[in-house]
Length: 159
Image (tube, rainbow, N blue to C red; front, top):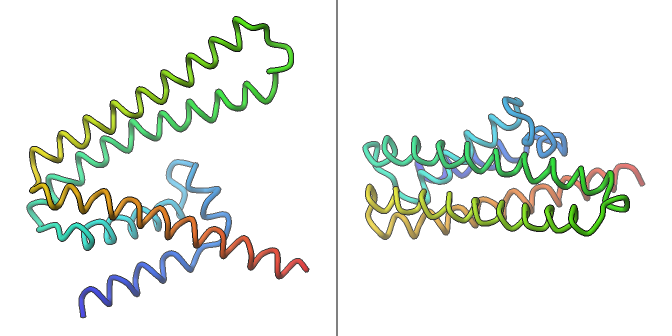
């Protein structure tokens, strides 16, 4: 019964938004981002079968990891914007610097992920760490599916 309630809650949270949900997700503190975060907490906690004690340990580590990853995403978006605005005017050295920067960003993101996984491995049983990977993939897939559905609904309304 509890699992069904969580699924209904998750479904409700994911269906109440619109495409602005995904645009606002990029903005810190947007109300839709908060809905996504609430749904994510419920989803991950349920999928990983976290006990209250495990959740107390997991979520601060996850939040710290997300802060690092959000900064990485902002840097990547900023760099992509710079490329769009002036890549035609850049010389080879500038372009190579951008390429090196992209590789460094990817490496930093991977290192942050490794550190996070190592941290939760110290605190959680291996099965729950593995469940994290599955929950992460499934949550992202459901968000992407919901975004595609909302986009299609919007296009259908416009036609």
